[in-house]
Length: 311
Ligand SMILES: NC(=O)c1ccc[n+]([C@@H]2O[C@H](COP(=O)([O-])OP(=O)(O)OC[C@H]3O[C@@H](n4cnc5c(N)ncnc54)[C@H](OP(=O)(O)O)[C@@H]3O)[C@@H](O)[C@H]2O)c1
Image 1 (cartoon, rainbow, N blue to C red):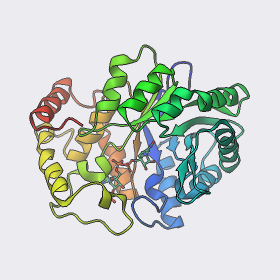
Image 2 (cartoon, rainbow, N blue to C red):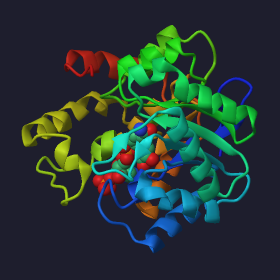
Image 3 (tube, rainbow, N blue to C red):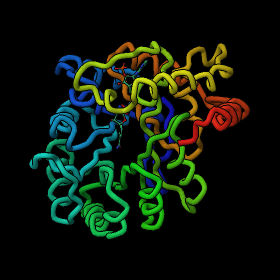
Image 4 (spheres, helix red, strand yellow):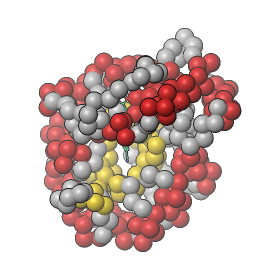
């Protein structure tokens, strides 16, 4: 699998990174341990050597399993800052908590040095306070982690990360959601590590859903869209249709390659839930570059604006 640099003076990541939220049993409904392990093994077999997780996914169980299963040459990016020892869970980016959380992740992952630790959706205020970032920088100097950054949930958080010169970020990026990455592309004055996730808009951009799509109880997508909102989003998929071709025969392949095409992106975090989906994504990523012709991307942008898709 092709690799790309994860920021300046850092390591390379495979351009597809396996995201583990979908197999945590929490986001999209239950998953068995066997399904989880089979999928991780399949990802390795297909050449994926980047894995994205969080200490909060399955309450640390995913980190532990990655620690047991992954070979040494596989890179792990994890996230800290969500306290699940409290009910309801809450964010904590205090220096003591962040240090303790990283050391626990290190133990679960069974690695002397974690490839990358990100703050898990800190507020702009928590980022600007700088304390959590100082802790991560200190742990990097001690060799506990090789790089660090922040997963960012808003444009304001991206602004704060730019001000604080955060060395690596993870943001949502897809045809329906571009603001954070576009702000980075406009205002970055140096090379940083960039992961993008939710490139299928939680499955919507796969183009396989019926207009009356239903989700099982416990699936986070129940809370994402109203019935009418989902129907509108599905109608808007029409903006990708003109790009269908022999090389990109499905809307899913267009959505995936849309993300792979962005020059800033180090790796695209994919969220396959079974081996069939994983194989499709790896196959449809193609042999790029060029993943999508610039004119095709421009066409999607123009039609998105015309269709009122600009979040
Ligand atoms: N804060 C952060 O840093 C952050 C936030 C979100 C996600 N992430 C990471 O990124 C990963 C992916 O993000 P995501 O789950 O938000 O969204 P996503 O990748 O846009 O969508 C994942 C969903 O798309 C569907 N899908 C996957 N492969 C498919 C295929 N080949 N054909 C058709 N449908 C397919 C599956 O849903 P069905 O059940 O409908 O099949 C799957 O659960 C997560 O696992 C997580 O590790 C990180």
